Image 1 (cartoon, one colour):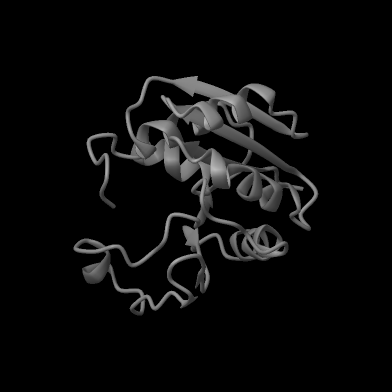
Image 2: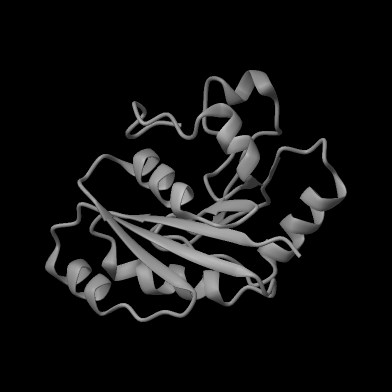
Length: 169
């Protein structure tokens, strides 16, 4: 059974973080670890939540603020999973997402990344309408949301997330 590492960068997102972590821990796939990276938060509520965190199968790492790409890279460097699933601190996962994504990656070695339909919630609601996958679209815009599962070996092969892209794709 492959272990899945769910990595969550957090910068002043304490208001939402517990829901994100709990959705990661509620996965139907049994072998999941969660790594939360405090990316230099200075919000007292976020700092308090992270200091008091006692979620099972979860580690909290800290770093000076360097953006989500650097936080994800730090988490993945400390992860022990074969598969990596980034999750933003203000997002949640459906309980069977990891199970279904692992099944696809296990069945299809030619597939490098697995993502699915998504729903917006909060200020905006409803389906997130992404264009059909095309490499030409991927190089110019965000056509795959960050909560897409991939093999750790592929992350190593490409050298991780580009930390120069602090706010971009």
